[in-house]
View 1 (cartoon, rainbow over the protein chains, first blue to last red):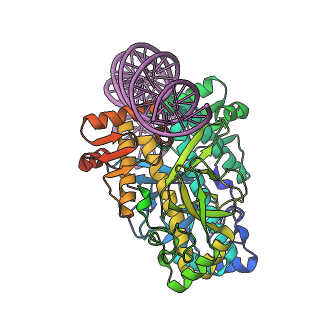
View 2 (view 1 turned 30 degrees about the horizontal axis):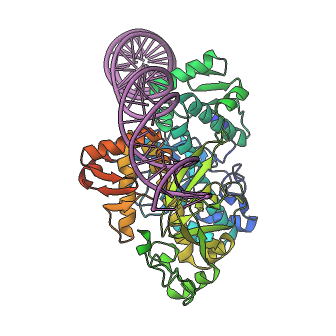
View 3 (view 1 turned 45 degrees about the vertical axis):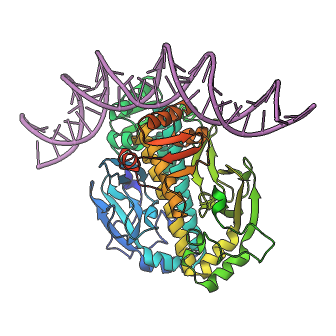
Length: 247
Length: 247
DNA sequence: CGTAGGTTTGAGTCGGGTCAAGAAATGTGG
DNA sequence: CCACATTTCTTGACCCGACTCAAACCTACG
């Protein structure tokens, strides 16, 4: 399904570049002119592929790079001392992973591919260097990081104020808008993550997630067959997710 | 209690500066040499005072500045469409407020003084400018922002994985380490916020917070008289808050 | 085709929310 | 400085949403 994005996967033909990447309007170069973009191109390590379940980076290991998702999907999570995992975010094509680690020299979280995923690796050192030389880049980095803060705050709101149904409605809508941003159908898509991951992310038990999905189905809000999801009644979902800004 | 911090409150005598501020090891200048610090000094608008309950900035209003807390305490919160408030953080002296707004030209949250509070106002425009000229400054900004992301992730973990008791233990310990960082007693301090705020922040009902406080008291973990808190059994609190990184 | 994840459904329990009502603390004005 | 008002905090009784435990059912894939 995600394969419909025309990213440069035919690595042999013509060196790929940020300029020609279909995700450039979502990813880093947003504010850069074509000259600056070439500078960015030089430091990016393209064509890194991870299979489902493989770790892109691991909590507490040295922090070297951020990663921009090209295709596929990634989840990030933190492991608590007591050993259990809390998923802190899902990252789709065009989104930048690893910003939470820029305060330290080790990764603050673990990133794992949810499906076969390709990423661009961007060494931090060069990134900071670049941000220093290009004001637009610095501004964009600030932008992305503060966006990340907001997202996390939104998650907190969700976790502390909303019911299971509201949380799930909100997640579905968030995914919907993100698919739309990539010019894909906002009402019919495949979930990149398992029920388990959804439950973990939203602070629920798997069983609860499952129950809510079937409840939504019975109410005619969605149609779900495994990971294949169709949002039937967007309106209803939106009012249900009420005060929940979409990520 | 907080008055013990020798910040420059006698505004008339000698122009105050970042260099002489007792909080400089917590606040912005961390990575700056004295020359750079002078540059910072020039753009900082000192001596802004807010009384308890006054707003430092308001969600959705134009974003112009970040604020470093000099004395007192601030809470930030986001208001959902459905009208209720979610507190996203408490900020103590030496901490920087407003970083979540750097992605937009309007504030992502509202900041309100919990008690009489003095802050340094730092215009963003100049801040970005400064970060651009001073690599150390840029790095420090990245550091602070990613720290903010981590904190927020920690909050998410707390909200989705921990019981009422664990959440409260974690908050108390977080406050404790922050007092300690300022060379104040880590075991005996005044809560800057009301029970209500604690409840809101931790996703609990006020009643629950109250109950847990008295339970802790009965178990001999703390001694609480209103906002006056004494941590009696740090050990026990720490094991209770187990997999919870201290902010 | 068989095994292992992943997903769904049911039954029972409990942590923490809600509602209600005092008790303290804090503020206000005369 | 005191009487009153208002907010904040505490305690109790009750209830419900979501968790746990348990078991069956898919579906993908070697």
